[in-house]
Length: 315
Image (cartoon, rainbow, N blue to C red; front, side, top):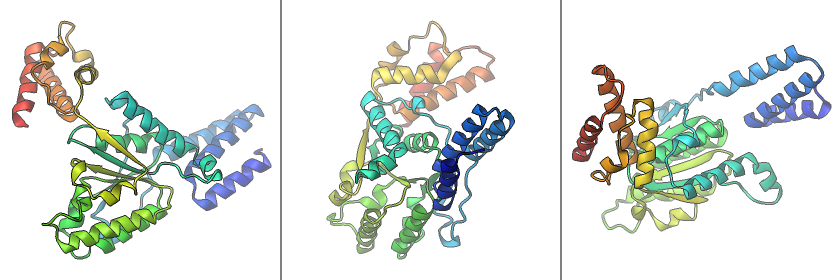
């Protein structure tokens, strides 16, 4: 039988809506029951927890913002990201602070929850949001910023307010992609009054947000953002095009057993220095598909050269 403390913790986490704490305590109860020799009960509890972790909570969005927020489940892991070591360490710090947020709060501090990702397209910003979601076992919500601006011009601020209500009431990772659409510098001469009001509203909402959700904003153009935004975020991560070593690592991992033992990736990449992570990954995927269709077992130098050239010409 679960201990009195475990029962109290289960009830408390259930009423507070702290799903992660509820699952953690449930596993502690399973371990306790296993030590007592109640192996069947312990197995059943673990099975319930595993099923709960694999399911995504369905959020009943209000009809008027249902087209602005999409829900997905990510399978990305930190190991899938080809990033500089310093960026991976900073992501690990976000994970660790989230997992020990109660400890930080007891000392008067908040964990990092508002993250700005900046860098060229295809360098891993969206994947990072997926890694945060999967690692922390939180649903991933993507805010369709382009629709927010184009479809709801004139009522954007009110839609933002409703979105932040969702953030407050439903714990998750919330990705504002193409964030520069609403975060542009307010001093820009060609900026319209409506967009300035939208940015002011966002600044107000994010500053007043004390939820347990993670808010992630991704931009391709850091320099275009309003200076007032930076102090609203707990961390800013700068993404760059992959180095030669990172490109070799990415291609090797993507090709897997389709990589020919005679393929010299580093030598080949000397001609393709400005391709992003996404472009390299897509080129490898194209090569593998062509390999399969032509009944070949491995990707040759000529084939990889061809698909990389296609990507370079396209961009």
